[in-house]
Image 1 (tube, rainbow, N blue to C red):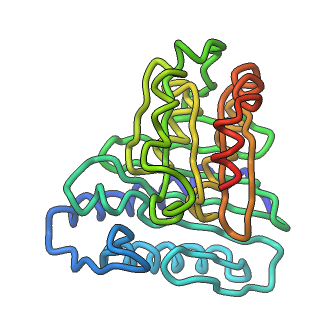
Image 2 (image 1 turned 90 degrees about the vertical axis):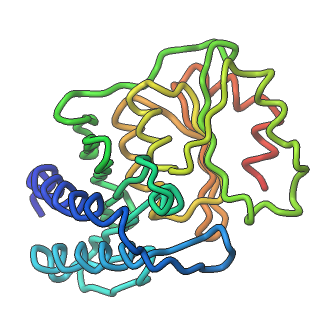
Length: 260
């Protein structure tokens, strides 16, 4: 398979779908819940996933597809697409601009392509393995900040998954370790901001593969590093530049959280 065709092809898909999501954001979204009241889904999530499936199948009919809403669609190829058709659904349902579409391609479980698009921000992040990462056609690199006290950290945590495993004030230590803390409610936004150097550290706990696979490749191709823990299908990731990550990995606060 010629991977070089993917950036422009997928960029076109993401931008087209993003326009539809923007048009529909302030209409009746028919919201329902999944496992808990804070884990919501709209008909736009489902429509977006079905639309992407059709696009993938029309171009790559033998590829496997794993989607957040529809689960696994088996194919005959070693290639597997992993998609989150609308990350940040809670933000989306409240009219906020921080939501994105995430699409990763794996070959035998190795991520070889990642694309993430933020429709309301007009930003598209793309990465091919070994070819670097870009935002809107411009190369991006991670921050080189090496002092935690001057660093800004983004945190993405699905709180129901850690209920009973930690205290309510478990974020308190971060305020003394970093210059600032942000929680945007959209993990793909955190990962992309880390990749382009706007965040210095990103901590994402108990994420699904469709939440993080594209972003992890984009970070890696932007020169970033991460400590990655996998428990079943739950991915926990601490990301930064190499120097700052080496400092944070020695801090028991992070070791304890990654092990939750």
